[in-house]
Image 1 (cartoon, rainbow, N blue to C red):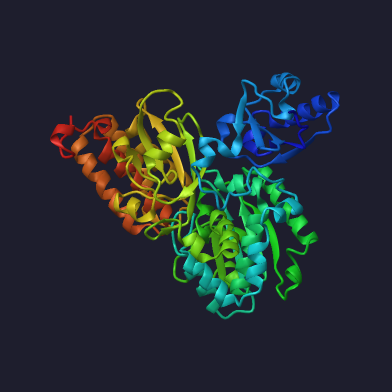
Image 2 (cartoon, one colour):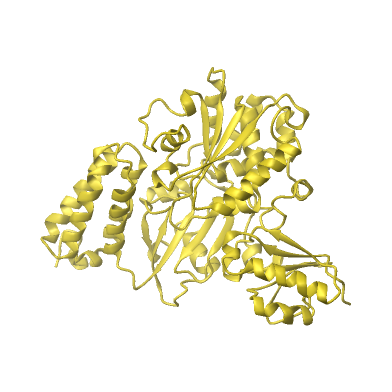
Length: 523
């Protein structure tokens, strides 16, 4: 029995738009109207299955049936063959929620992304939005901080610092004004989760920041968003306007005594502003350079006032924690890595996209099961985890569980959850050189180990690749990495040695090292 579709959903995420989602949505509306079907086309965020974009979902009594990837020229045929009734077709994927990619995940922070209209307040509340804020407003600030602490939430920006400890520090600081700053300057290679959340469910970020404001006594917040994300900037600004209209921001939030104002500030393309103190400098209208610590931002942050600085995924996890309770979040994950992480699959990979699952999933499961191996069809040789400063790991380490401690023990880091895949044609000496070159380009120049060390690193790797006194230059490279790690003011220079050393350790043959002779030998 055919049932007329109530709604058709097409992503408005910038990744989907880049492959024609806008045109597909317009054509579906026109074709449905021509067929006499009163169909509403709803623009959502992406489900994260980027290889299937533009993905079209049709509402049926059984659930949403997906079709994809749908090209503009496919639309008329799909409508004619019964797509609006959820009929079968060569592009039909079946029920989207039952796809292996979706069923294997545990979506908490991204529970609404791809499901709701990101700018509909009604959609947001109908799918559980504001429940966390309402509960938080009924609690004392210190109890909210305790709840976040007990959840085990740690910073999703890379450092993994316990979020509740940071909030407790700001709560206890005495000041006339406090700030909440969200660092959305997502500059790591292979990372796009912040953008996808902001474009697909911006109210979650707004709600998380508002809960943080109540918890620590802040009255003003800023989202520092990178200029390379124009769609995210426009979506977040529109969502903030909607939030003010509904009393979710401004004076007396949801009828409470809380006042919280939220602003968007757009960065100017500096990778270093992903570091929290550089971001604060930029927010103050200064050049983005690293501040020495102490003092820490929790005590002297924006304009010298106590400031919570968290990233998008950290703040985006807070509404679910407050809505469902700390215990529900803490039950997920392994060891000290509690809850879920949003992993981003990119590079030479067959199925790139967003995967949210509990900590503890292995690197191999993410690359081979979710990602489907390489897009080229060639064997995987290396995977970089954690952005351009993250380690390169070989397939022999695919059994490594994704959690902070396991990665740290292996000389790697989870970071922001970005995973970039390379096949067996990659030159790992060239990738090590890129790490040093990237640091030289993006260094703020504040400290000598980073500013000068990266330049010397490029020169040293060039000599190694040219076969010039390889043994001595490998020793020099190792000493230089020690200096940058121990002497740099921030993680820019301090972590650059991680991809370099991992490349040398796991792929010595690319540096002309005789593997049989060990790292001390060279050809």
